[in-house]
Structure formats: structure tokens, C-alpha cells
Length: 122
Figure 1: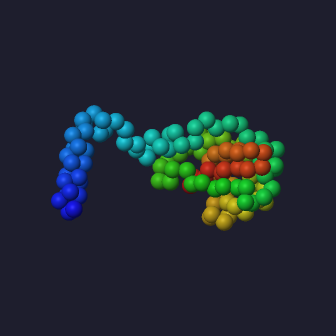
Figure 2: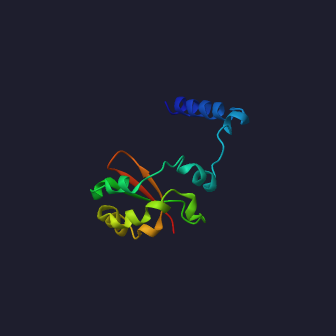
Figure 3: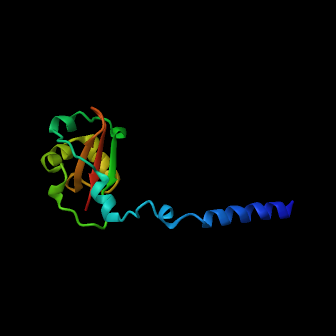
């Protein structure tokens, strides 16, 4: 039985080693910069009314955006709604819980009428 198992394992190992190199490297290796560039996708315009519609803290996600990489604060879509974010108790509380403030918000993605993901960057 052991010889049969050893033979099967050897056959699988030899078969795997015969994969052409082109197939073995078909997927590109992603760098952190590539992931950061594509991570947010297209950012839609968010209004203060959109922000005001979020009233429950459990509907707020806070996600750190590409820590360790320098980002221009004007690249995101949060510049025009940072004061509304700071004035919204649910959003401000969620940010405080994670150690951030409205001034750290880089981008905002609305996920329905009353759910939001705040992307923060220091």
C-alpha cells in the first residue's frame, strides 16, 4: 500500500513539474502601488445630504487606504464633505473608534442610501 501511495505522489509531482513555464507565470504579480491605484475604482460624487442620511454607526465602515504610501488629499472625493462628516455623529463616532477624524477621510463610497465606507489616510 505504501509503494502504491508513493508511486501516486511521485506521478503527481512529476506531472506538476512538467507544466510549461508560460502557464506557471500567467498571473502577474501585483505590487502595492498597483493595488492602491485600482483599489477605489471610480469615485462618485457624494453630497452633504448623502452624508446626513447615515444615522446608524453600524452602517459605517472605516477603511485605511494604502498606509505607508503618500496620497494627495485632493485625489479622493471627500474634500467637499469633510465638514458634513465631522458634523454627523454616527460617522464621527466610527472614525474616533478607529483613531481617525473627519480630516483623515480621503474618499467616501456610499453603499446604498444609509451605508457608507469612509476611506482614511494619514
